[in-house]
Image (cartoon, rainbow, N blue to C red; front, side, top):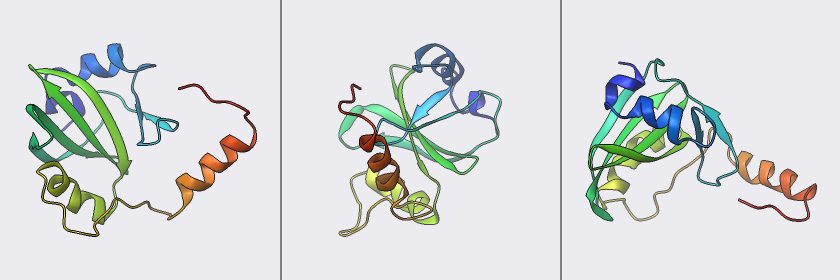
Length: 130
C-alpha cells in the first residue's frame, strides 16, 4: 500500500497543509522527516481516538516511522510521527482507544536520542519560537 491510498485526503494534506510539503514532526515539534504520497506503508490501526469521538485516526508504518493521521469530516487535519519500534507499534492502538496498560510508554530506537538532540538545540539558542 502507498500513503495516498490509505485515505483520499493524505496526498492533499502532505502537499498543502504541512509546514513544508511532506514534513511530519515528532512529538517535540522540533524534528521532522519528509514523506511523499507515493511511499510504501503498512496500515497498523484505523479507528477512534477516545479523546476525540468525532475523529478517526489512521496509523501506518512508513520507512522506520509510525505515523498517526487524524481525520475529521473526511479531511486529514494533523499528523505526527514516532519511531516504529515493536513496542510503539503494539501500544499505539491501545493508547488511541484509551486502554494503554499502566506503565506503558512510547520509546525510541536509541533511548535518549531525542533528549540529547533537544539539549544540543537549546545549547546554541537563547530562545526558540515554535
